[in-house]
Amino acid sequence: MEVARKALVAVAVLGGGAGVGSILFALVTPGELQKQSMLQEMPERDSRRRDEAVRTTELVMATLKDAAATKENVAWRRNWTVSGDGRSA
Image 1: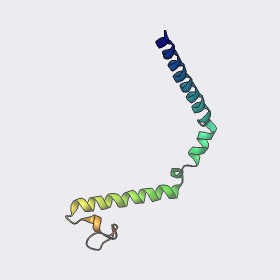
Image 2 (image 1 turned 60 degrees about the vertical axis):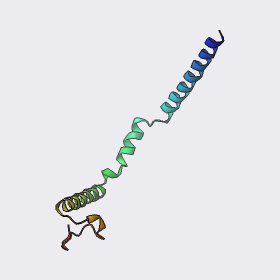
Image 3 (image 1 turned 120 degrees about the horizontal axis):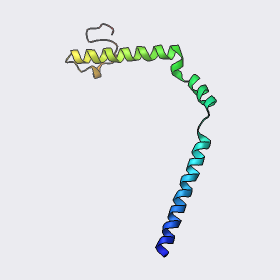
Image 4 (image 1 turned 90 degrees about the vertical axis):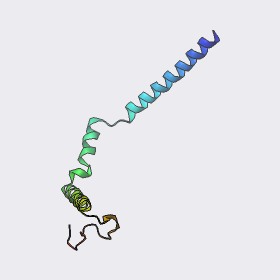
């Protein structure tokens, strides 16, 4: 009988904790209007930020292509946007 009582108490405590956690999660999650406003404020919505990210990606890809085409260790370059022969990427 003692084992059954301990098991019931353990189940009740765990169930209560899960219930409290679920209620807190439901209270903390943003509503639909708040989600929409957060999406509007995301940096990817800004065209300048988007263009900057595209340019950065282009530079990284150009550096990777250059690194694949040469035996030089491009990680040791001071300026990664300049290829080994002095041309800009």
